[in-house]
Amino acid sequence: AQSVTQLGSHVSVSEGALVLLRCNYSSSVPPYLFWYVQYPNQGLQLLLKYTTGATLVKGINGFEAEFKKSETSFHLTKPSAHMSDAAEYFCAVSDPPLTGGGNKLTFGTGTQLKVEL
Amino acid sequence: GAVVSQHPSRVICKSGTSVKIECRSLDFQATTMFWYRQFPKQSLMLMATSNEGSKATYEQGVEKDKFLINHASLTLSTLTVTSAHPEDSSFYICSARDRPSADTQYFGPGTRLTVL
Image (cartoon, rainbow over all chains, first blue to last red; front, top):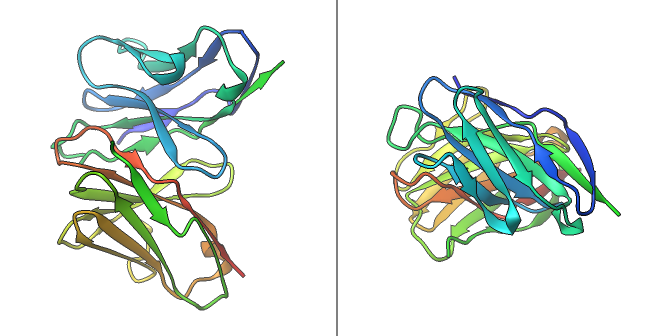
């Protein structure tokens, strides 16, 4: 079974400061990893994903994440926070497509990012 | 590209009535659609996986007769909450992928259901 742990349900940073949202996963097969962002009363928007290849992946809005197999982590970072980054962020894991897991996403509990002036 | 819509965005209904929520892929054909439920301040929980032309696969603990899913075409899946009760009030979100080998799901904007 897969699982995702997001440390810190709430993270607060100052505008312009580094954003670090933590995600650790558990998977019995090489995982596919995703970060999604959710604004109030909206669906999820894909920020970035790791499937195979380069372990440092860049996404939209200046976000990036690094897959570290030895640490089973996929932390999300952004060098400089902007007010518009305030939202809920979800880390998710799935099995590779066409495998027994059926490409189902398992989500973490989410991290609410607050950006202060 | 890869836009998924949901209708309605909000619905309020009386206890005991049924509510249908539509999920459409606007610019691609979705071989598979997923339905999630999200309680306030919580994560998304997968309810069921819907494949076009076949019966949906429900997650453990999800009542099939309560949450009817129909995926009649490659661009439309519907979720019907039958005999809704206040505890069914939630945010329902669908997602879709365009082929079995696709690694990414594209999410709709969600439907807020309130049962009085």
